[in-house]
Amino acid sequence: MHNTLDNVVIYNGYPVSIVAAVSFHCMVLTALVYFQANRAPQVLNLVQPTVVKALLIDVNPQVRNAQNLERQRLERLDQQRQTREEELPRESEAERELERERAAAEERARQQAQERQRQVDVDALRQQQQADAERQARLEAERVRQEQTRAQEEQARLRQIDEAREQERQRQQAAQELAITEFELVQSGTALIQQLVQETWSRPPSARNGMRAILQIRMLPTGELVSATITESSGDAAFDRSAENAVYRAAPFRELQTLPINLFNRNFRTLSLIFQPEDLLF
Amino acid sequence: MNELSPLQLILNASPAVQFVMLILLLLSVVSWVMITQRWLVLSAAKKGVQNFEHRFWSGMDLSQLYKEGTEMQRENMQIVGMENIFRAGFKEFMRLRRQVSVHRDAVMEGAQRAMRVAYSREEEKLEKHLPFLATVGSVSPYIGLFGTVIGIMNSFIGLANQAQATLQVVAPGIAEALIATAMGLFAAIPAVVAYNKYSANVDSITGSYITFSDEFSSILHRQIHSD
Image (cartoon, rainbow over all chains, first blue to last red; front, side, top):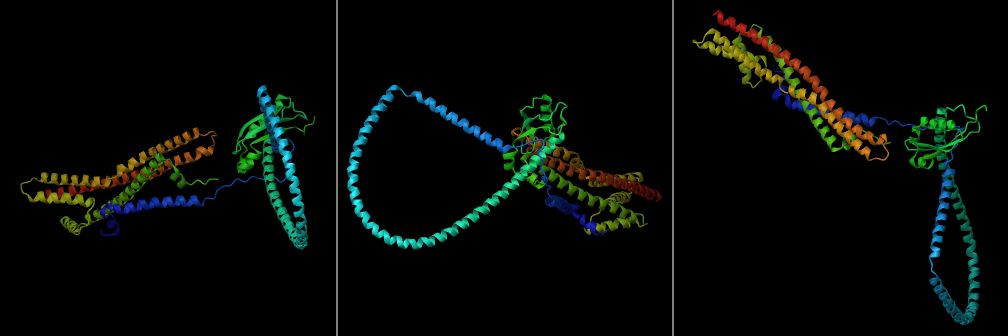
């Protein structure tokens, strides 16, 4: 009768039970946190193709951006000119008369002032000539001394220029490398879109070589397609529709999620796709 | 990519969901206290049954057995289960038997009544807290579901204010809400399992009590009619 279990059951076993239950929950929580911390995050890599074929689709956002900027500038200029023209006729006749009188008065005052100035100048010239002679002698001595120091300075300067040029070169190289990686990312992104769209594009029987439709698509950073609109029709409605359908079926382009957001905004936010069959027999 | 762990989700959850989670955690802890405590009590009762039956049927004199029990009580040791029933019945039987005026049948009746009282007291001891486990088992999934519904509601309200509805906006809210359901199930499952197992155990123990009290009263009956 007198064994350990019976001792444990004293006070109906409440203290032991409480300790057991609380420690059990602590253990479960710790295990949860531990396993969560050790879980390796899954990373989706953007596969970069080594060869990029631009067969069907041509993507050129840079040119489009430049065009946009040019258009905006022209619009601004137009606006400025218009506002200027609007202001012009508002001046009344009386104001113009006043203006003319004021101009005449100013002209007279200016002539008198010039007269006075000329006399003062003559006096000043004479004094200056004397001072010049003295300074000439001083300068001669100074010049000899400067000649020597300048030679030294010249050498130092040349060295500095060399160094600066070297630094500049390195900086340019780094920038170039950066640009290359960005260019590569853009290339791989466009190649991916191109491949996906190409896979889903089923051309209608009415498609002919030389047909050409341009679609403008807008995307979200998640790779989802917002809209696709035909900016340049091929002239064949079926062909246009097939191009549009291909883009909608190929979306979303989930792999674009891994691109840096600024790069995405610059290059993929809106994109023009050119659909142009070239491999047909006729 | 933002790393989401359950701990972070719980800490960042909305107050209502956090409150539900707190309730569920408390329920889970308390139900585990009950589970452990019942386990100790029931296993002690089972052992007590075996022990006492062994001693009872060893051919020992009944008054000797009763005296041993009294000594154990004096040493502040607990007397559990079957022995309590035996002691109640035997005590009543001896007391009534000493009085000459009392009839035999009345003595038997008195002893049986005393045993019945002791039995129901023991049964009550065994069944204590089992209703609590049943309640936790049936209610905590609903509490968890309540937390989930509130959490999902909140995340959809948040979604309504967004211009661009992406999965990333709702996903954390829904995940945090689902944790409440997970906690409800976590509290409910052990409680239900324990309730079923323990009520079966209680049935078998009380059954053995009833059998014993019948056997014992038949022994007393034989004794009272042999004189």
